[in-house]
Length: 457
Image (cartoon, rainbow, N blue to C red; front, top):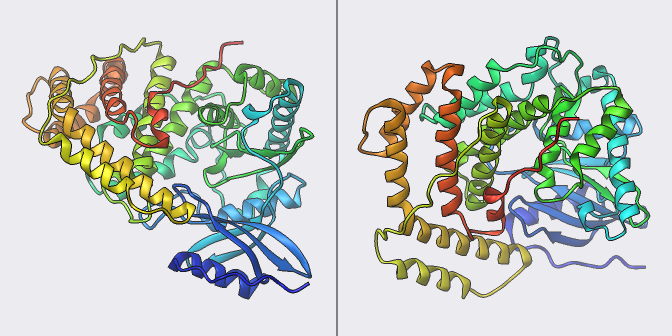
């Protein structure tokens, strides 16, 4: 049978991926760019006379820096293949744009969509069993991935968090950002001293595919991985559960404990929830000041605010502080509100195209809607923020930047005695940011969501 000829992509990035696949793997017979915040492609190539479904995992953009690069991520896939852990096989790396080319595994994500209760339970139980298998692999198995090997309780606790904070300090370029400065100080003051076992950990836990028979076809997405405390992966599942429900997380932790013999106290879960949420903040808040054109700015802002809210909530739960929500902002229009409504309407009227082009158009419309909410509520939010900083520092500042600088200096000298005040302060700020983000894009549900608790057992 003759190979179907596809029209060449018109987008420059698409064309580079298409050409590399044809030159290095085989004729491309299907090619679709995913409509999402990060570039990725579902493709089929012809290899040895048979169709080979592939997924091409693209870059996050030039201004995003990760503690695990894509070459290390690809090597993690190879380690799993060598040790019988189900995961996509890597077929190669595209140098420009930097992409991982891997098998397209059969199956679906989001076990919450499984209608049959018994099948749903089987899938989740199998995933936990595979996680326990991964945690039994010796750290030496990951030597080729060049992951730092932690030895002390401090290194085990911070093996992903410390390099992420270092990236943050470089990327934030001296800008005061007391929210994340406080988070880093708190993590360092609260190292779990009794955790001495290091394993491979996918901090963005809970990501897998499953088929109709209830079998897990593979683990996916290892870009936020390290060698560290296995409890961190269970904590990360709380974040995944926010968009892809995993059921009763307390029961899943209990199942893991039975399989592994490890004991995971609630306060340990809260520590690593705060830690992984801080990683998201360390890596993404700098993008709010230096973004690349291909990045979905508003999606990242929703992630920043949402994960930072969860970080502060986890710290508050760890130290036993009950947070109180601040009053909602009041509308104080800065200028002509119709201008933003007109801009949204104008963008939404642009003609459609591919799924990826439609996504870009809709993202622009959501961004314009967000700017309209800033126009409506920004003055009220700024006034409340300045008043909160004054209550902490005793000084009234005329603008937000100078207030941030003063708060940063205050945080730098504060110790554990100020934790209760600071978690309430940052909770106030994040609640106001979440209010402005209401209705602003598909990810806007995240800043308003609270994570499922994992209870004491």
